[in-house]
Image (tube, rainbow, N blue to C red):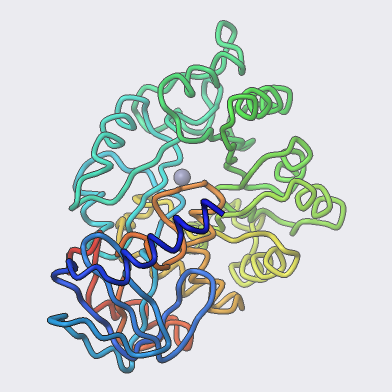
Length: 380
Ligand SMILES: [Zn+2]
């Protein structure tokens, strides 16, 4: 009862509150809130957050009104696979409506410096695994910067505890058998240690058999879709699906890599891009949660608009556009438990994008961002 009285008191306070200033109303607009799409909606907000979302016109004395006819509001985009190391990357992302970058292999020091920029209005929010779990001479050690490894004197458990101590938001495993690579006894220990410390584990894989082995070890997600020949078989799919892992297919970078390898002797060992698209669609049809990520700056991809290309490829693979948009918004915030991001609703931060057109009908409309707000402030 006490709760009920409090609720009604709050309701009266809110509905009588005349103190809202600088309110903006976007009228007659399509809204994809991160879950569902509704046409002909009205949204009011100010710097404190979203005041109201309604199918009825919203009246606010003195409000700025934006005609939303022919336009769509979507939550800010998020990119689930990058490697970023300076402020410019974070600004480039946010200017393109990408409000968070999830780094998948970096140094502890860089990750910390980037995380410290989290609450800055002009930068995208940064999350990171810090250095991925690898071995001497393994994937991740070839980029010219120092990375700690699992070796004779550093156990998988110690490696993982060090990452957690250094602030890792999640743990990354780099499983790549075309080089020296972390073995499955080691990945098992990394995953168990990370889970005991309440951290998700995401793995780099290129081979379906590796995805299957890691699936059996309860990996939480894959940082790429495997793209070696042949495609995953039934037994491998069973093991992958049992883990309920999500996948970040990184189609755009895979497409570029396959193009680059066209004349290379090993090209035949890898799938045609058309088959990669089929594998992504199959993963979707089998219920895997799809997350959008680009692996920028690989292939000279930028941290902003190149995410749109990933969305177009996910759509081309046959994933419905509403789920393509979820792949770049709520699927990421849900899988990685990013409490700063989520569904657009009353009381939530006024951070969203107004698009000319409707990306649910035509994914190419994602490029037509007209206005972007962060915490009620217009940044574009
Ligand atoms: Zn990567």
